Length: 172
Image (cartoon, rainbow, N blue to C red; front, side, top):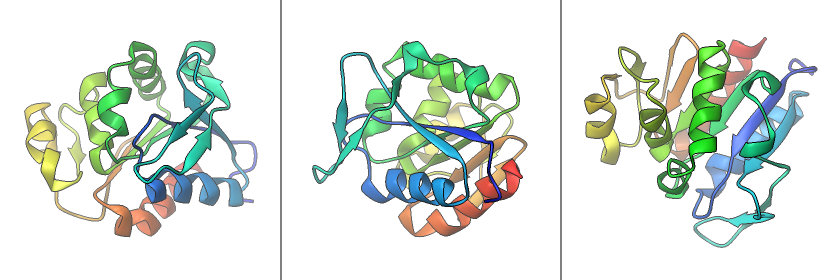
């Protein structure tokens, strides 16, 4: 129960990558954290690329950056939808500005780009959006997990064990 007392937000939108949402959600709960799935108003469930549902616990409009020690953004094509919601972008930026952990995997770096929190940071992502990360001012590194201050990034589902270990260590 190394994360007992910690609160973690996981953003959700349609077309999320199943493992990239569920693996961190279950791993953080297993470590004792309270994990809250965050969506947008009027949506009770989102579906993965393969149709697997996740139920929303709260909306981005109803929570505050001060409510969370960390925020995780899963990949898939959901981040392309997430970054269109100003409340989600504001939540990511707010958690980052107050020094909370921001963790993103795969295409989730799109959300960090839109939040304007990557400039000067070492980061990784799925190779398909490497140019977006570089153009946002980040220093791209092709490794399974990169931590630069409060920012943790990974590339693909096979990086999830290292991604989650790094999040847990950062929150201890």
